[in-house]
Image (cartoon, rainbow, N blue to C red; front, side, top):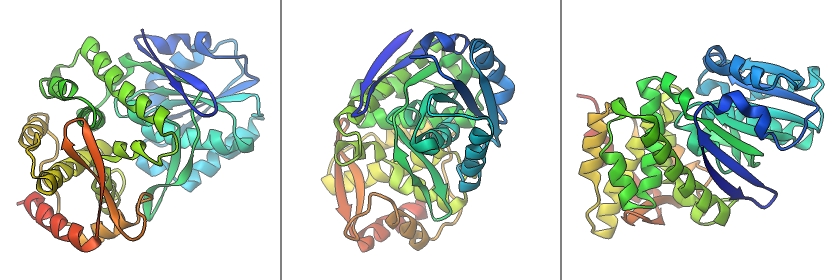
Length: 357
């Protein structure tokens, strides 16, 4: 088992990565809780809920199952989970366990952050994508006008990552998770990036997966420790996300996986970086790897003005200029602000190349 320690302004917590960890959750709880609410989704509940319940045999355990999918990061589901917590008598000495992917983690974490003004929670991610969202304490729900617009910074008490759970993921979800690992590699380390580019997602073993997850989480943890509230270097974690989030919202949440949209956003950011800095970046290498691993290589006809409007409504936008995370080279990200007119020209050109024939 691999352990990574994260220090936050409120408390430190451990990230544990290994096999069969879901069977031993009671051993890693930091204290005795009055009760536990496991929040999971309709897909994960059939696979791993019993394992987690059985590992907490000595606890007073309740469960809540939400519909699988991005649509559950809604104010309605948020309210229903608060109702569930109240009905089951959770108090300030209770624990919420987020068992699932990024949707469950973001939603359950935001419930924990707001229930009785904040109770403890732990993340038990079951997707590759959630290696990113489960670390750093960003919790949120979506608004119809933007992704993650309603939320908080609220770190978990632990992250327990059982890599055996990712073997039941669809190929689309594996692609989605690896996009975030690619992002973490591009903003940090050439060797990490090249190791991912040498990997086929159809032939991933636990040893290599654990190595990639550990490296990705270590990148995230270092940045989060330095900039917990996203006032500086944490913004680099948004590489590919400004356009990626806009594509998700424009298509409708759930029509394309988060990571697949971010992958397209990274292609745009790499191309923009090459033009802005006059440098050569691994745009062709990443494009080829994405094609070999069946990432979407095209988009339906999208209006660049509509996408730009969504990019401009992002939480990071200040002074009517849109910040984009660019790369001077692998491992050297910078935030550059563009006017809407400048980005519209670049976006129109990019979309023209991405439209389905």
